[in-house]
Length: 541
Image (cartoon, rainbow, N blue to C red; front, side, top):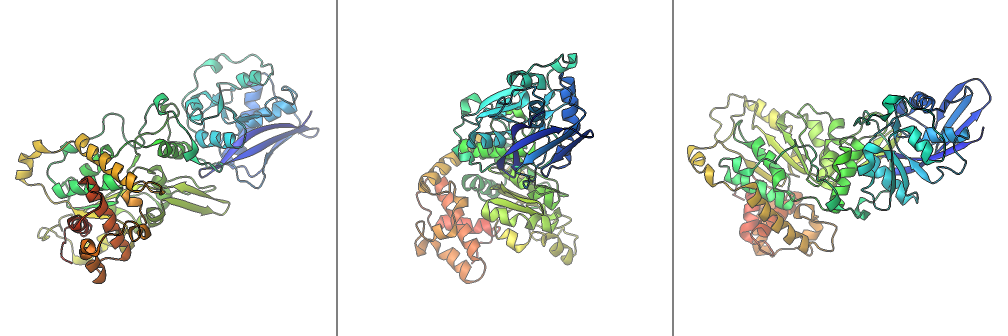
């Protein structure tokens, strides 16, 4: 017996690291030891690999087996190491030549009968392998389309361990008849993994070869904005949110169309560009929510967690290595929190960091991970527990303290980061009579695309692509507006009705108002409209 080696990839957050799998078979009492900080699902690979090798015609000897995953200090998780462990053991038995598989990276889970099953995180893992100088990547057949998104990768899809043995020059035994059945589309239970210094923006994808996919939305056509009756101010705010990537709060009684409006927002957003599409697809690959054969996610994701969501499910985390939450799954798309007043205040306040920085860094005792989280936040809430405190609130039956307690969950620091805050009032009979003249999503989306093109040209040469991403220093520098244009928002700042952050966010919205109107720079009316939409219709300053 000799020392066998193979290569695989460990993923933490969105960063991958090449892992050297070493297998040693020595004399001694029969045992199978796996070292190198494996998690529970990885430790269970001992039984999967033993059964798969036996059913592929090469049973493991009854000796002392030690498998090391190097670097040993790097935490490793998931079932994607099964193939590499099997290859290392087969090399140790001289089933495969010593030089075989030396330059291949192996990613995949093994079934007991030798079938190769799909795993999560194949896209960032393949990228890690290519960037480390190992373009030959062995993946499950079900993950082939995902792996081929990485340019320069030579993908070798495998359906069985026997096929892999033949690829590396070995001889496989007779296989059970059921091994030839198509592999089921299976995603392993959520386990954390690890990945390389990946720069998704460097990928040159081929959008024409891929099927566009949507994340978080049911199959079929997107809902249309023409379904919304009335709500002129809310529709304006929705269009501005789409045009500039501005966060939005819809406040109003039940049945006024808050959820209806929010569900129409994805149809106003343009498709993701190549860089953003690869980022989003990689996040969903790591999370295990990507359908392997769907290709790149081209439509902005839409995530709508229930109001019982925990902090971990919202921002990510969990035991062991962190995994992405709803905020990261909404990256480059929309995070919609319906009934926001019912969410726990700590869950809502956990969103303050990603709203400001566009990413999440989660630390745990045995590792940390960084996940992208640049999303458009949409909050929909009733004004009180009974929902009738809008306007004069004559029909509200809630005690004043109940109203304050209900809205206090939307903390001041959180609302200070929400650019657009509008009241959604009950629809009148006049609005219903004019419903046939409502604009469609296609019409509004065309204006949104034109506005985003104007913003993109204005921000050329900067890291930002839309107005919602512009920092305050840039607004007070190259994009500084004359005092006569900003006098209303400046007065609101002087009187304490706006923070400096709120002042900057009003100006960002004003630029989006001007972009939708086709103006190069906003005027005073644009700033006044942006201020009104931030203060829920209160125009006095």
